[in-house]
Image 1 (cartoon, rainbow, N blue to C red):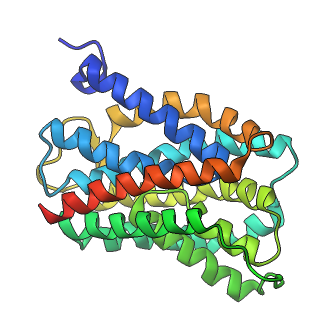
Image 2: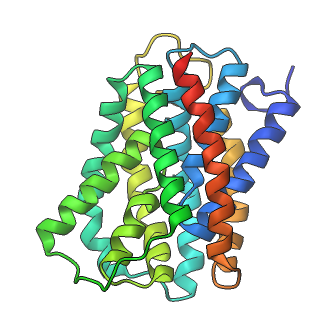
Length: 274
């Protein structure tokens, strides 16, 4: 009998821990990437464990989003210590984010595994291209009013709920386009990860509660054993990534990370074609 939760074998535990370390570090360092890294790897692991094919991608996205409940707090605390989180901006975006993060998983539930994998793969490839090009806006514009921030937050929430990520891939470009320094945008994005994850995780638990074919240890679409393993590693590495964001050549690391995302996007597109 396995000593690990959910009957996990040592090899799976090591894979989840390694994945959590990389996802947590990249999320803290770049403000993005946690979900984009976790979802493809979780899809591989869940497929290898024989989960129902029609649930594999849905559960990978839901479990990835649930990890952000914990990693966002750790990363946010580290950024807050540097005084980099713009709490006024976070408060304006949060209401729309909460609503959008509930809607995103509902949209995902209506999609079959192939369609969801295709959407994820295309979106990650697009995000990787944006990171690689690193286009900067010419000049800057002031932040929109309350209505505009509500809509912006809603878009961030919907996309985050669909792909199981913390929203930095949308919120960071939006904030920098509106004249916010990149370090402040990354830090504020980390703070927004918690309301995204809270709303999206509750939605995934509710929408998947009575789903047929769920494996033992599942709470709705969230597979708790994987969540526990990944969170342990992610919470340990997210603060380190946040500290390194103020010391390392982040732009060079973004290019390397973009290449990794292309490989993960290719896997998800291959999964969609099966």
